[in-house]
Picture 1 (spheres, helix red, strand yellow):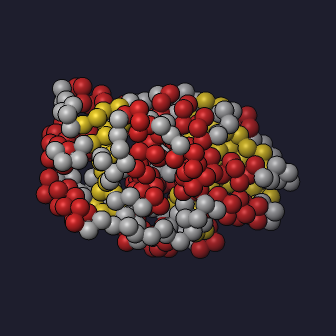
Picture 2 (cartoon, helix red, strand yellow):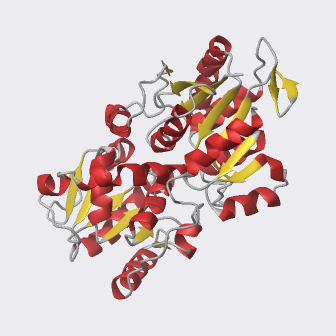
Picture 3 (cartoon, helix red, strand yellow):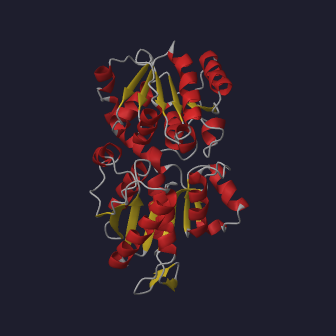
Length: 377
């Protein structure tokens, strides 16, 4: 049986994960047929189209074009439009990744959809498509974080949970997930990083921005609890301004963050901050690899800096990726002046080199493909 898999991306964090999976499935054309669905949750071309091109992703078979909205409206609209895709494609499996609203919405729609014809899964007939979750089991234990709710509900609904680090398996066992449902495969996003690392090293972004390696800090900032609250946003940027006195900060500005900066009339000092538009994948990896330190509230950046060996300060009070702290280069700076400056001082006096976690070896997607072959055989 040739299995049809609908693979869903909502925006920038999902694309590197699916790029790795498509490469692995592409070596098995006799076993798998794929349909790439882009929900359009991140509709800005700089956050979407350029990334897809650089990662070698195929053009989406379907673009739902949902765009920005409140959580409830966005989830509802993705569900409504994705249900029509399920009806037309009749897949045996659906693969979702990460923790975006699109991840949750497509998981919910899949869990309630019945194909016209049954198929065999693990030797038993069924009509509901098999739901697989890439990057399952991650937990920040912060229920005020919308992504935390998305992760937990998606994992609850999923038939196959592909786990990127040991804490994920611990969390799933604690939540009562049957052992046969979860598989520690490694980090599929790191597959793509390692696959494109050499190409990224040839990027000329440093020359374009007038930078030298290890002469700057790199900042990313987009989480709602960091940028939507004007007081918190000011606190963060005022604190980072103190770091920028001695180490200029390169700041590719997320569209959401730019809107908040403009609304609050916040203008970081141009002699300390270099603000840019969102960057493509290759340019961003080059900036990451060449930075003296990275400051971020992004989950994926914590993973990438660990593999690149670059010190990272996470501008959050928690992380769903504890292996980047226990084994990697990441430290929690929290969101206060004292916490961030303390973390920066500690890294400056004793930089963390860390080590690459087990199974972050560039072969995670291959392990995913093997499991899919087995369960659909």
